[in-house]
Image 1 (cartoon, rainbow, N blue to C red):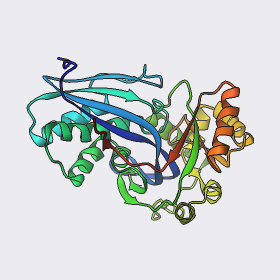
Image 2: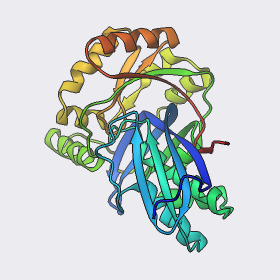
Image 3: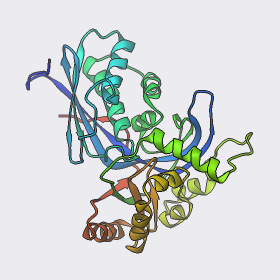
Length: 311
């Protein structure tokens, strides 16, 4: 049953993310690759409203194409709500209304942000008083990016990417994002990376070495220096995304020629992120990319993680 309009609702907002650095290591025993990544939460948001209901249901709309978003048990936000209910022995259900502002299947963690927002929203709606560590444990069951969407800011992720350590980032970093009309499946991109490494006999070892975030990335963030950060952006998944979508290479070149300090495929792609020197430069890049027919979005980071929005 979908709730009536006058049913009390809780509104939570959670951010999308950019992987400033992503080193992909060996496949672990659980089937996931070992990762070292530096996340930054950015000002493209997912808004989730939670209302009490007899069942668990979800509705989705937004400023981005939402046609590929599942409305059944595959929806991460719905699964998050069900996990919170089980963890807190909540007998009722919830209706989730999601307004998406993060490109779908674009490597920016929109689905993960939905899940993080749903955890916070259901906890607030039901008054269950989950601790930060309890929310994190639920989030980690849903995917590697969900804990970061809860935390926000800037952080280093290890393991599957869900073991987080806050990272200091001074100032504000300006980004322009260009989403692709068709998404890329994250498992598909990892599979292509493994194939690429096998084809080209890429050495990711020595095997005893765990992936590490380049210290220069952390130095650039602490200094609040976009020029230094641009020089050390890295995404091991980019080669796989470019193999699957060769046209993204032209887009990366176009953005850099328009004035971006550097371009990088965001996470598993196909969204492309351009780091800019300041807000004026970001506006110039966005206008130049829009003039060539691309839908370009200007955002900044870091921003907070999932938060209740009063009112």
